[in-house]
Amino acid sequence: NPPLIARTIEGLPFTLQVSVYYKLTTAENSVEKAAQLGSIYANFGNAWEDFLTVVSEAGIKSVCSRHYLDEFFSEREAIESEIKDKLSSEFQLYYIQLTGVYVLNLQFAKEIEEAVHATEKAKQEVEIYEKLKEREEILKDIRIALAKTTRDIEMGKTDSFKKAAAIYKTGEISGDTYIWDSYDAMLTNLQVISLCKL
View 1 (spheres, helix red, strand yellow):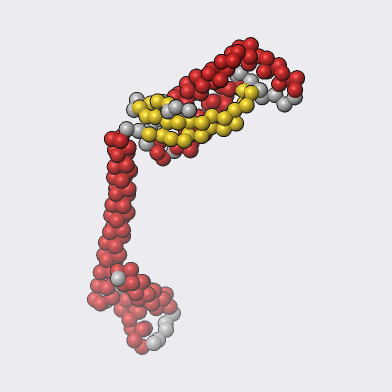
View 2 (cartoon, rainbow, N blue to C red):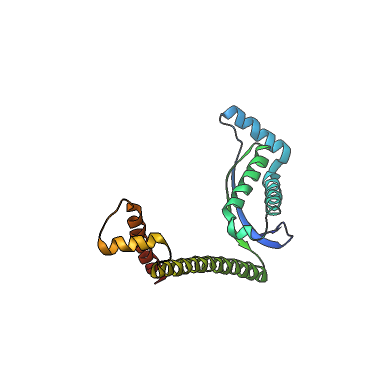
């Protein structure tokens, strides 16, 4: 089939080639088939194929006009499926069964395609920047936590750390075992933070 000219929801023109497969009649038994074939011939004569071409082109253009430019690159299969559903419902009105729809070629003007690719690239760069920014914020919090924890241990500002340090030096375990556990967990935390920092 020759290329079809359609437009996006923004009104941007493009060409596409679509192969449409069908069979006459939707009936299962011979009596109904004969009746449906008679109806098709009575309505369209030998021009039924030209009629289906017109119906197909109108349906395809209608579906395309409901989608934005970028969707033809990111959601092509979904659009193809929508075209198939549209044509299937139209064909059934005339006792014709749609068996397949395939979008073989889709082309925009070179400038439009370049603009779309540039936009996609910019989106990816923004996503990468946001992830790097988030990572820097996490590392910043780790550095702050490491600095505060190191200061508290070195200066022994709290009684808990003083007691824990005494227990650690003497090896005496009092009833305040949570102090020992707290100190030991803090040392482990420091090691983990140091590894993350490296």
